[in-house]
Image 1 (spheres, rainbow, N blue to C red):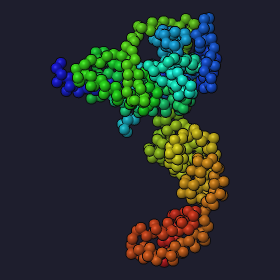
Image 2: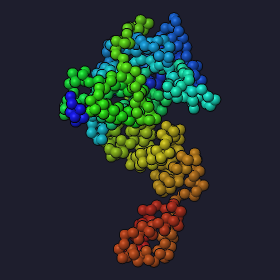
Image 3: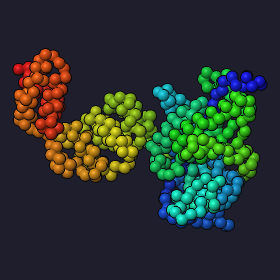
Image 4: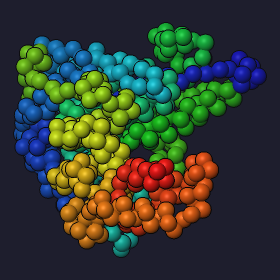
Length: 504
């Protein structure tokens, strides 16, 4: 191919994912060590997760249940029998020199997950999802006297490396998709939806550091090889060199890493150079990928059956285990049952905690009022402060009391939002304390009427403008009354009283 022809080639990205999800269990997958965060390294360890001679693994039933629930959520097949294998490779964070994982009989296979990309529905096939153990964690460190965290660095700049085996043996679910993605933005939308589903299932904690890690495979192919439906012939993929980008830790990072990698490969191909089949590392600080090593092949891992773990019969678990209502179903129900807009229902089902709290508020108060206070006011103020709903889950009773003060007309919605809710989040006070301290109780009818009459007497120009048909005059007078009442009057009531006086 000539340089001119290479430069003019139109290329399309083909992307597949391997998503590693830490499962929320109290203990590790093959031993009784705690999975809770530890203050000191290498304290949640035992002979099993350290790979000491003679130590035998025992499968954590809770991890298997979590895996089957994920299988149900992605509509995957759960086989009659599933087995474990040894994946052999050496790295310092893998104390046994092999990883217990699954090979040719994964616990879930042939599933799918639907999600939205810019309001369009997409569905990605999931080839398999299997159980395995997490390795430990590594820190590359420079010499120095400062805190350890300040001296961590990339491997090429390190003086030595430290290994913490507290994470070794934490149960992982590796979810492997088909190469169905055609753009980095699709990958980000898929990951957001997957995390949402996992959180609803109660098998995953998105707040735990490193709880979701992504390896992404990307190839560039000629655009005319991609059908209108996005399908690509298998032979095209076999001929295309792909790179694997390892250890991406966020949705945003996945989009950035793949955008960079697609651009890098496109430039190579269009300049007439070959794309090396290799494993690359995403440097989050610089937003680029760097070469790590040549890409391993399946044969390099020398898989063989884990003799210390018998086969698991799990097919019946799919019928016996129940899963909660998932985000899409709950979203549709909120629209039908509460009369919410699609946008409001989407906000209110963004996490299971948000959805549960909304329903608890909607049981006591009008659904529209509940939606406004949870979706707009509470979530809006939390987002502004870079907080999550989980940061205030021990104060839901106080938020409920605040909604009650508005519903029973004891304070104005404006004061409730701008003074009380913000004071609760910023200062930690309860609603009644803030209302009493700032005298935010609603002004009585007589006081409002007096303020209305005073505003009319004091602003003859605005009164004349109103009679001349200028629409802004009434808003000015409402503002004057609100100022006189310290914002404790209802603006709608003030507007009605002013019009009654002015039109009399």
